[in-house]
Image (cartoon, rainbow, N blue to C red; front, side):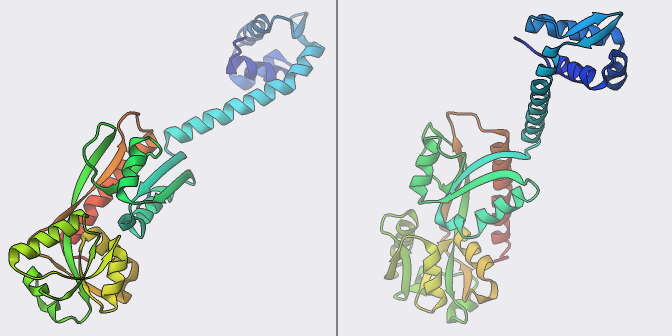
Length: 309
């Protein structure tokens, strides 16, 4: 059985008005068109709904039984059409986003909030895990969008990569604050907070100190930079972190952060990526969010370059 929206709409209007001519006026169609639509509906269902008496349609008992179902189907079809319009207009849908700790504290919640502010029917799952786990979730298509440290190239992940420069974090009022840039020699034998031994930033920092002939005095070893910045704010150490963590700390705590940042030389970078599954097409909603996320990431990097943190 292949019932159309117009057939159901015409039937309900004939039943509601009790007249073919009135139904035609309401729907903006001719009487012959209304009659033809009803006849087509009857052929489709296989039995008559109306008696034809003197060019009038008189509803049979079956028509009254069918009326309730027809009204329900029209309501459901209208609801489905509205939902499809909302999906098409990016006003309805679900997003599953995964990010690493550096992005979870401030940056991603702000980006998600801005994106969904005028989209009340969008549901978002925002989960924080380590960068390798985020990459696995995207590769296995468990999440729509990931934002974390750039993974090794793999066929299951599409990436848009961004290079976050590293900054030296020090307590407010530190003697090194007058310098425009900090070098390994400035930090020679000073207490440092670094990430675990094989993290790419730690490898780069150790090489920079070694090349400069400076001693790296590791006082704290941590999993992420955000707790390192708390230790810096208490005057316990210095740290060299990527600018995303620096911006998150500065914008989360403002003047209460207790930390100031200076460029570190030589230039060190930590690459971050916006990731999507490569083996399935992204929804229109996910595509739009990726565009928004990439734009906001570029804006963040520009603000760091302009010294706005």
